[in-house]
Image 1 (tube, rainbow over the protein chains, first blue to last red):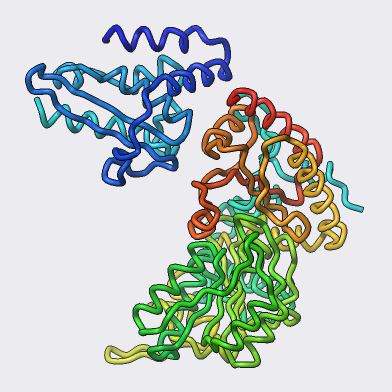
Image 2 (tube, rainbow over the protein chains, first blue to last red):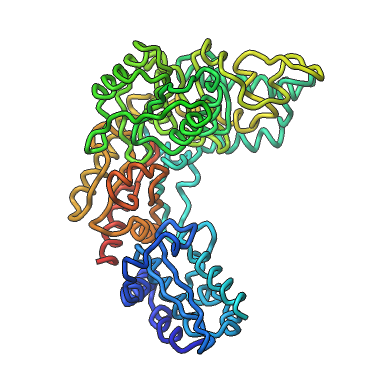
Length: 137
Length: 404
């Protein structure tokens, strides 16, 4: 588990009640740098989302690490995206493969956002990242 | 008298809690809840009555056939039409596909199919496919800037354009707006256009008298009328219905079969290939009985009171924009708050136990016209009350506070 993720999830963990939890998630989204409109192209859209999610996954060969950037047009999904980016950014493919995003979201009480029926594409984002990590191992 | 407390007690699901909050169900446009009588009928059928229909001379099969056909009669009475004009399908979507496919051989290249701009995708895509197959052309009826359908404008358009088919909704699923069908159907009749009305949303709320509407086809879904899922159907004016090409072929729908050729039964039988949704049809009788046990005027009055109350409460919130017609409406309210994404609002409302839908509601052309990704839709039914509205408005204010 990387230290960025620990830092960003601290406030969610101690949030009292679901409203505070959502407030923290939306705050995380707000802090995520906005992606330039030029990058918000259909090719970068994660399929199967009710909201729009643009996700870029690059591989830094010199550092042997994943470089992620993304944005969403909804606050909640953008916050959840920020969590995912914090979870995976800068990891080596080996480290990324060890991550179980489901366990992490479960621990944070956010697991319903990972169900396929939720349609907000969190699952699709995680799958996309894991596929990339697999390819680079 | 419309005893709303007694009615609510008939719908067990309304007592559920969601996210540790009492459920406020405002998604009846997606699917209605079911009265206990419907739920009991499904269990009773499988426990005591299960048998296939239209074959077998044993008692269970004959009873199942009688009950299955009895629902057809009940629904025909509900719509004031003849029972042989009712075809069972798996829903309004399949009904439109059945009609569109059935009309294929009556279309020629260059023929026009007119649709409104606010149709559900189910009343757009099958016609586009039909047009592609036959060389026909889809044209769009005029729409006003507030997305309302002006029947006079549409009638003039129909008279000028002379489409072969006109497919239009009786009430918009996204907006709830009720279409004034009469002038449109008369314009169709004047040029011998075939009229297809999507009644998926209106069939429960408006209890349509089809001879008065005078359309050629009217499609519906049982699950939006207190009935089981996986069932719907269509009304078709008999002569025209019977002239449609068959949609699916197989058992049940045939008269005679040899290894080289077959003859088909008359409508509605020839459109019901294979073993139908027997349990669904039989349980649907209870839904129709439930609806007809309620005085229609009282029911509509109640629905309108709750709807108007919701509209007033919503409009009083600063930053809310309502897209629906606020007078002539079955009970669906589409709205947004400022520039907030409907997904965020719906997610937060769900946290408060309020079930609404967000998104494009299978009407992407409407969203393109409005230039928005979607709306939040709160849709009401006969079992909703003012307490539901209060809980919804309260949750909405709290959600807005979380967003601001």
